[in-house]
Image 1 (cartoon, rainbow, N blue to C red):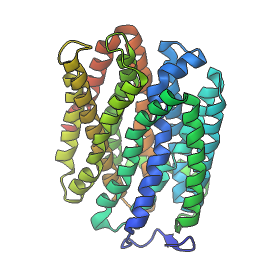
Image 2 (image 1 turned 180 degrees about the vertical axis):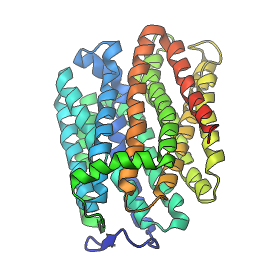
Image 3 (image 1 turned 120 degrees about the horizontal axis):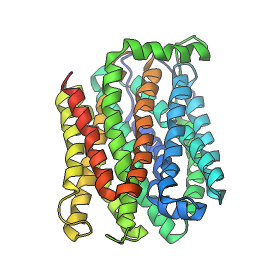
Length: 398
């Protein structure tokens, strides 16, 4: 497809080429990584910026808060504004914020930049509904799952990548490098993506005002959002706390060791295409329950043997894989469910879905950092276990 092609939202029999699917998946991965680069670096960044352990969670939380705001205020524009222009503009906003973070030497400028990195990263959630618009109903779960695979790879690989770069250079280099990557990505997307002009003719204020109505009248959206909120809060808690745990005297891992640990969790990316195919075949409920059980079991497995032992470290790796597999699978199941509700409000539904669970993720990061400071890994992990249990209890009412 060329940049002169135009796609509207009316037809539901479109096809999406493998080349375009790959490009969208790669774009999702590169943009989504921006949210997670700082996660394993909260130790060195907080030290450099003068933040205490209790406040270190703000490094991740501010990015997630910005992401949540963007989901509510920017992502709905996908139902109103031409997609290519919107995607590239939001990516460039993220590039400017990454550059500001790279130059930051004090806490306030960095945390402000982190907020805008989150805002710029919502381009991912404009791209995913865009991919759903291109896909016919019969394979929509598969296409969304494949594009989401790129997102998940970005999420999973961002942590080890930033750890390795920091060990070799500095944490500033992570943000300089990502700035350059975003500028290059926006250029390629602008030259490659077909235009897509939404059919909605409302103004921005009416678009935002319609969102509470969608929440009230769409029980499926509420249920899927709350499922994922519980799981993603547990995910954020785990990946905020484990770098602190692994760097503590019990394990004493270096930044490179923490990077290898984070890399192990990347295998959870396999859940996205599997979940998409299961959803296309009508198996969403059982797949959802399995996802929740995997997240709950992850926190139990993490307590096997004495903290700091070789077996315990191996169990933490298994826990990371199970946790990521469950969370990534469930988010794709949610995408497939809400995107089936209709193309005319797909971006708004996606914004509401993502905003709900990313707000929970921000809370999970902050709660995890606080719990680790107050009661160590024991307190943080039991809070993490409670979250998927709540999701399972709620799922029993479906």
